[in-house]
Structure formats: structure tokens, C-alpha cells
Amino acid sequence: DTAVSQTPKYLVTQMGNDKSIKCEQNLGHDTMYWYKQDSKKFLKIMFSYNNKELIINETVPNRFSPKSPDKAHLNLHINSLELGDSAVYFCASSQELNRVEGETQYFGPGTRLLVL
Amino acid sequence: AQTVTQSQPEMSVQEAETVTLSCTYDTSESDYYLFWYKQPPSRQMILVIRQEAYKQQNATENRFSVNFQKAAKSFSLKISDSQLGDAAMYFCAYRSRRTSGSRLTFGEGTQLTVNP
Image (cartoon, rainbow over all chains, first blue to last red; front, side, top):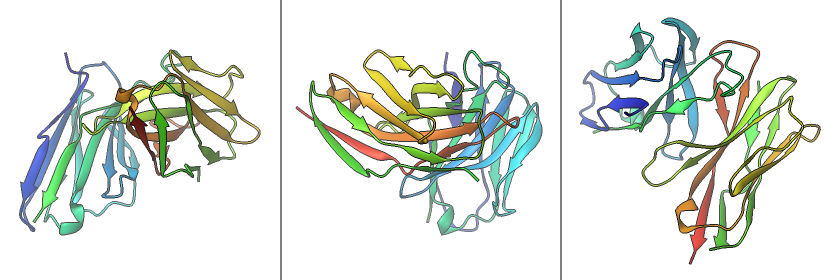
């Protein structure tokens, strides 16, 4: 009964490869996010989708492309991986206009990506 | 743009003692949320406590409480009766209520060590 799940948890790959990270939430939330945590543990937003519509698209290279097939899923595809893409990527979800929960974002377990 | 600052990169506390983690933020908005998240070595992001800016009463969750000073833009976390399981990285985060799908803006984090 995991609330926000991500696959895979670990991803080791070579420079130049293309990879995807999948995220699913079973909380019935309407908004999903991708965050990147760098080697210094700093967390920064990458993308946000509300009801499958892109809301936030931070200054992220075009090599990163989010895809939301439905409200419960938000996948992250990365083309031509570079060494600097090595980080932990977190998916999160929230329910908008929910004063009870304070629109709290719930996080997945993270995907540690290592580019060699 | 909003910013969140945690001025204590590291803190330590003796088991059963009390510790306070500091957080300040900068915003021109009046309606927002503030959060404390905990990230243990498992790297899972766990919500600790949430505060809504329009509520004057400080939030509490069991051994965790906050001191929310809206005018001073300060949001500190107090952990009472510290336990070994409290050892983790703690992140302060800000979220606007102004727009849908608002991002969390995180501080740099405070690494808390609990000594037996």
C-alpha cells in the first residue's frame, strides 16, 4: 500500500545513454512533481504537473522530458545522460486546494542515478 | 522569489534532551505553508510537521513543535526528548498558496546527530 512509488531505486548507466524513471501515486492526488537532490543534498524543483498539465518547468536541460499519461503517473525521461546528471531524483504528489492536508507534498523513496 | 535559509549545517543533541533547529525565509506573500521534512539515511523524505501562515497557533506533533514568528519570518523546529531515531537531515520548506502546483522551496538542511 505504498503511497508514492518510484522505479528503479538505483540506476547506474554510461554517459550518452537514455533512461527513464517511473513514478506512481495511489493517493488520488491531482498534482505531481519531480525534484532533484544534488551531491550536497540540496533539493530543487524540476517539473510539476496538475491534472496531466505541465505547470512548472524549471530551468532544466531539454534532455529531461516529463510525461504524465494520467493523474496517477509522472515519468521522467532523460536523453544523452551526462556526468552532472548524477543525483537523487524524487517524485512527489499533492492534492491542490486541500486545506485539511495543507496541500502537503508526499515523496517517493527516490531514485539514485549514477552516470559513469 | 522565495528563499529559505537554515543557518546550522550540523547540530547534535544528547538522547532525551531537547534541540531546536532554526529556519528563516523570505517572501512578500501573506498566505503560504511551511514544512519540516526529515531525511534519514534511507533517503526517504518524511513530513515532520506543517504550519499554515494564517494560523497564529504553533503546530505540534507529539515530540515535535514549531515556533512560528510570521513578522520575523522565522520557523524553528523543537524536538523534545530526542531519540536515536531522530538522527537525520532536516529540511525546512516553503510553499506558496498563490498558484496551483506550487513548488516546495527548501533550505540547505541541518544534519542532526543524536548521541546516546
